[in-house]
Length: 81
Image 1 (spheres, helix red, strand yellow):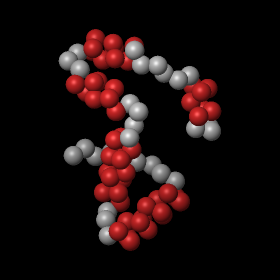
Image 2: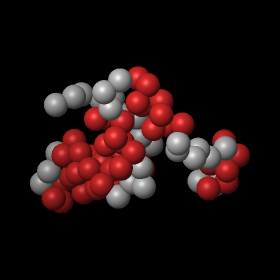
Image 3: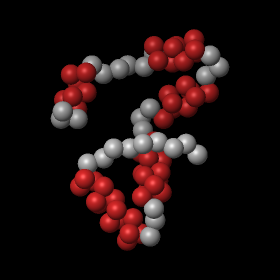
Image 4: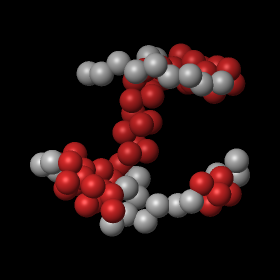
């Protein structure tokens, strides 16, 4: 397993802590399960798998070259930032 640091706002932490108590699960387990669900439904799941299985940098760059990326402005609008 890999260890990561995660910074979240107070309200999100308190909600996670409450769910953790109610479900009798550590917050880290809830985060792992939530991240697994998010990644399983990601529209980039297939691309991620290709990149992880790529043999070299050239293959990764080829995969990325063929992926349409959004502009920063479109990203901000999409997520109301």
